Image (cartoon, rainbow, N blue to C red; front, side, top):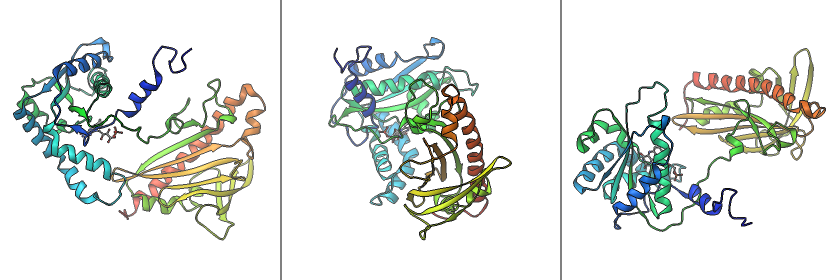
Amino acid sequence: MNRDLSESGFDLKQIDRLLTTTRAVRKRLDFARDVTDDVIFECIDLAEQAPTGGNDASRRWLVIRDQGLKDQLGSLYAEVGTLFLQARGRLEGTGHPKEHVVSSSAYLVDNFSKAPALVICAIWGLHDNSGRPGLFDSAIPSAWSFNLALRSRGLGTAYATMLNNKTAEVSKILGIPNGVTTLVCFPVAYTIGQEFSPAPRRPASNITYFDQWGFTRELPSADGSARIQDGPGVVTEIDTDARPRKVWEVISDINMPALFSNEFVGAEWVSQDQTGVGSRFTGRNSIPGLRDWETECIVTEWVERQVFEWRITDPDNPGAIWRFDLAEQGTGSRLRFSMVIGKENNGTAPRAQEDPSRENAVLFERRLIHKSNMQRVVEGVKTLVDDGPNVDQ
Ligand SMILES: Cc1cc2nc3c(=O)[nH]c(=O)nc-3n(C[C@H](O)[C@H](O)[C@H](O)COP(=O)(O)O)c2cc1C
C-alpha cells in the first residue's frame, strides 16, 4: 500500500500542504501577470461544490476586470483602510506582534485596484438574524474553496471584507440590486513564488473540548472517554476591558484565587524568590466538611504579563498543572485559566483508576467542580480589574 495515500485515495502530503499553506497573500501578488477568465471559471466551478443550506442555488460571483471600475473600488477600499495605513506608521520597526499583518494589509490598501481581477462572492438574500441557514453560512464555505482552488493553481488572494463597510457605494458602482448580500471581494493574481508556510496556530488539544465546554485532553483518548493517562483538563476564559498589565498584577498574586475559589484557602511563598521559574509556594485547600490539604507548588513558567504556570508536588510528575495565560484581545485582555490533572500526587487519579468503568464519570464530576471554582476565579479577576481605572498601554 502507498503510505502517502489516505484511505480515500488522496495524496495526503499534497492535500495537507494545500490546507496548511493557503495564506492571505498581499505583498506577493503578481500584478504584472494576467489572469485569464478560464482559470477564474475553473475556480468558481470548484468553489460551487461547497454546501449550501437546503441545497439552495443562490450564490453569485462578480468578476471585475475593467480598470476604471477597479480604481473606484480601490478608492473605497482605501477609505475603509485608512486605519491600516495609520497603524503601519505607528508599528513600523517596533517588532509588535501585529506589525507584519498590519504592514501587509496596508500594502493591499495601497494596491487593491492593481489586481488583474477582483472577484466578489455574493448571495441572493439579506441577513435577517433569524438564525436560519442560507445566507453568509452558505456563501462562506464556497468563498474558502475558491481560495483553495486558486492556491492549487498558483494563484493567491486575501479574504478581503472591508468593502462590506461600503455596500451602498459598491452596489451603485457595480449595478448590484437590492436583496443581494456581498460577502468578500478577492483581489486575485498569480503569486510571486509558490512557497508559503503554515501559520502558527493553537494546537487542537488547546482549543478542543470534550463533552463539556472547557473539558480538554492533552492526548487523544483510545476509546473516546476521559482517562487519567491522557491528561484530562479544564479551561475557563474571560475577556476583560483592562489591559494585560493590570490583569497581571492580580493573577500573579498567589493569594488571589483564595478570594474566589471554593477550595483554595490561601498560599504562602516558601522560596526567597517570589517570582520566576523555580520559585515555590505552599497552597492551602479545603473542601469544607470533607478534607483540608496542603500542596507544594513550583512555578514552572513565568513570562510577565503573559504566562504564570505552577505544578503541584513534583514538576516532572505533577499532581496537577495550573496555568494562567494572558493576551491582548481587542482593546482589553483575554485571560485563560487552565489546569491538567496529573497521573499521581493527587487525590483524583487513584479514585478515577480504582474502577476503569467509572474513570470517565469520576473525571467528569471532579472537573465540573474545578470548572465552577475556576469560573469564579476568572469572574472575580474581571470584577477587580474592570472596576478600577484602566492602566497601561
Ligand atoms: C472574515 C475575514 C475577514 C478578513 N478581512 C480582510 C480584509 O478586509 N483585508 C485583508 O487584507 N485581509 C482580510 N482577511 C485576512 C486576514 O487578515 C488573514 O487571514 C490573517 O491576517 C491571517 O493570515 P493567514 O490567513 O495567512 O494566516 C480577512 C480574513 C477573514 C477570515
